[in-house]
Length: 244
Image 1 (cartoon, rainbow, N blue to C red):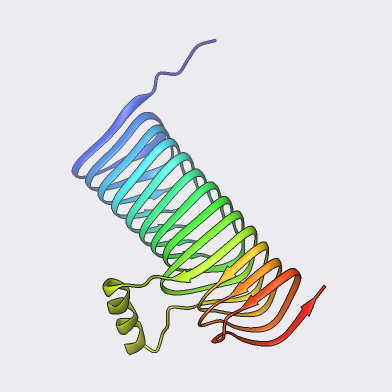
Image 2 (image 1 turned 90 degrees about the vertical axis):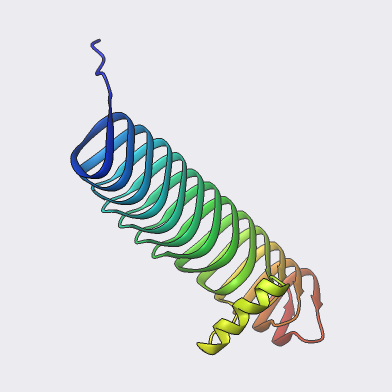
């Protein structure tokens, strides 16, 4: 069988190119790619637009980028401001900045920093967040560890181990002061949270289901259903609780 030779695509300064299959795509400056991109490695430093999907083994973006399609990768890092107009299927996914994904996200290890918006569902084996996020659909992961540096909103959460807490310290106090000026708080808002072990702080939810449930400071929950134990701090507000 004849093998297709993959060439490199490199843009330095300002330039544009057509999509295709490449060994390496490297954009340093301002670059536009017209069409789908498949590459062993994909890197962008600066500002770029891909008018199509991106498929790569190893990718990184530092700066501002728009992908007018889906994103598929073994490993991908987004630093800065990014828009992905399709689904993101990335095994090892790091997001640090202000990122919007118009579709759903599927990952083995997902780490969020900054502010992330996901318009669909988010499925991962491990989900770690230090920042704020909005997920319009379901957040489902085996292990969910959320440290709030801002507000977070999700429709439903499901996982084996779910932990939500607020960061403390001088930097966190500055962030909280800024949020209060805009009438926002460092709090997670969800309709339903379900897990085997659920440990929450600064969380507002209609319903919490779990085997072991611990509600700390800043929690407001309409209904808690638990199989094993419920540990409720003095400052936590629970309208109704049931052992099932």
